[in-house]
Image 1 (tube, rainbow, N blue to C red):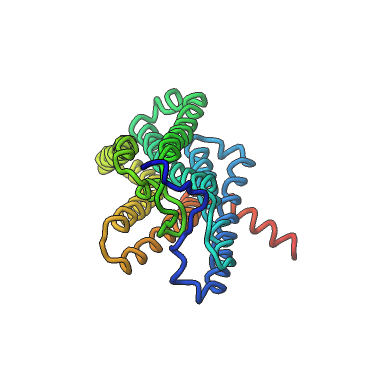
Image 2 (image 1 turned 90 degrees about the horizontal axis):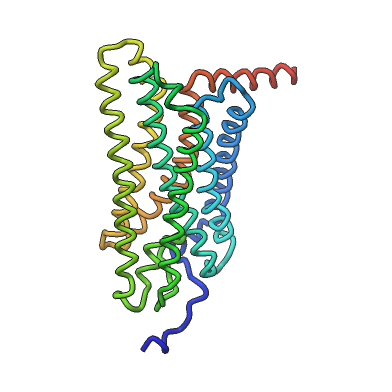
Length: 313
């Protein structure tokens, strides 16, 4: 029976079919969003790299966070913009696996970095005297490597497991490639058992990340309630983290809902919301809220802007 299965070399993405009548408007706004995302993230990254006073764990982690945002949007926007200009929305099998891997590792990486940020804030507020001893340069490098390498390896393992499957369909009802959607195209469900097990283990690992983050902030809130100084520090440095975390979980929740609901129209609407949430709102919101909320970065950016205005005059 397996010998009769045709080999899939290309996938057809059908998530754009309903919006092709307004594709030029969509292309313009998508390109504008991508340019703004590049501008704000690169500006924040360059500001942190060039200013020695910002070479502290909190700002370095923010820099890593913005780099991860650029990595994720690069996995989505170029292909999406190309599809808006093309009458046929196709992607090669290897290209689909690469895109699925980038988006998967970007989302998991975001959660890992948020977990490291929560740990950093816990040390800074709850154990200030030990902060610089514990959060040394070497430990910071190890944590950053963990937050990038772990999602990259998890995504790679999931892709290897997908690659061994024989597929019976080449139609993906999404705007982009997703690992689990490719798994559902398998001809023989019995072959996907290992994919499911590894997938659930990965979900469990990142759910534990989420619990660790929530525990950290619950502990921080308890610590900061009775101290005006700690309360001010919490409001300035932790509120942006919590905002990013909330936005991330909203995106994940709607993504799960979009895969589970039966109505096709509702499913398409939820998918588009998830795309906007993960590829536009998160990479755009994070540098903006951190840039405006963290005093050092805000002052540095305002100083650069005022200097440029003075030079023009």
